[in-house]
Length: 263
Image 1: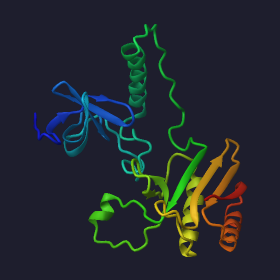
Image 2: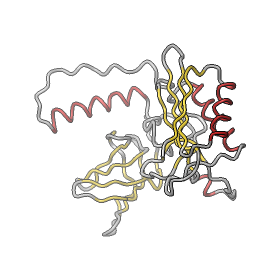
Image 3: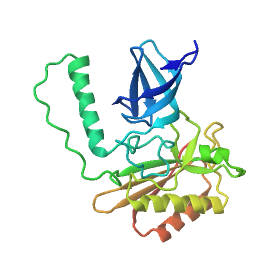
Image 4: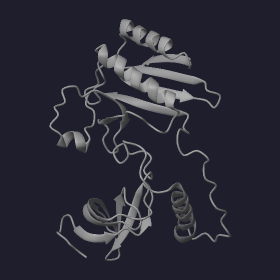
């Protein structure tokens, strides 16, 4: 099935057999579980192990030989980089089945609790634009995607506004469109980015702790009230006032506009 080195085993033509937790699916090799992100049951892949534990491995796909018929096309351009919405490649009905099986396994197989019949999970009516709060981070060292790294483009401006990349406290993915919160959230975030870039506002340096723009928090209610909180690291009154007045003028939908200076 594969070949191994003592340090980092490599396995070829492995079939993914089940959905696991935390956005990973799994395969079984030589009585060991291998957790692999962004895969689905039915995928046949080559796996490079990245972490070895006594009872399991973690790995990444290096090549797909076959893609599962279960798969569906992710709808977000940031899928598999952002780290959120980890099951977009799996239909929602299958996600619910997997989550129910995890609950059953945790209670019966791990906790050894006798169970009566378990009622099926009631799925959400909305699978997009259902959140009522998002917090974005400004960074002067944004995360470069694999496509950007492999391109011939040079990147002089590394400012970004978006979400932290999983496992990277100092790297932020510049988000164009997020499907978690209603569309006004995207418009506000993108306008804040455009305005601050065009007017030379400095973005936060997460390692060295300097820069003006730190966070952007957007909240909404079911009756379309919107709160926007701009978090500054430094207190530059002229730039702060200019940005807030611009947001107030551009987005009359904003019900509550606030700022915080947080060092």
